[in-house]
Image 1: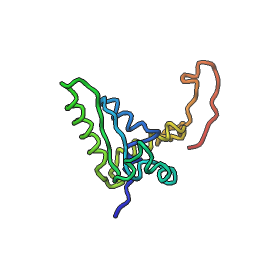
Image 2: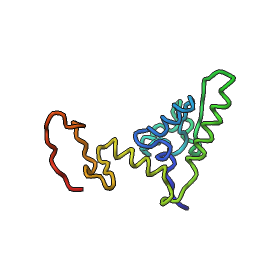
Image 3: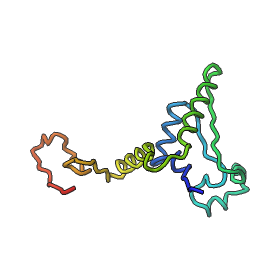
Image 4: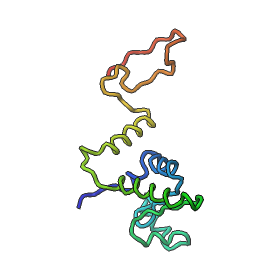
Length: 140
């Protein structure tokens, strides 16, 4: 069976992908069950402790919302649709979402290299060079 990192795909760089789903839907999304804690040793330590009963269950997502009754069902359904779409395994060559996540991670780490860009991922703090400073040339 093909290994697929569902947790990493849901979380995205620094948890930002999941935070965006939560912000857009006003729902809380929790990754639960076996494999929901990154460190297997820590997961084993937590198993059986109060609040960690879910670690005995298969990996799953819990979506919660405390919203007015008129909109809560629609928001939960919106979150479900987004999450189901994200969790569909996609051939790596067609996985634009993963490419976007990797690009975001590179931006966060300061290692983004734009294809065809003369600056090759290094950005000058002096956007319009108004201080008369020169930027060293780099090779991409």
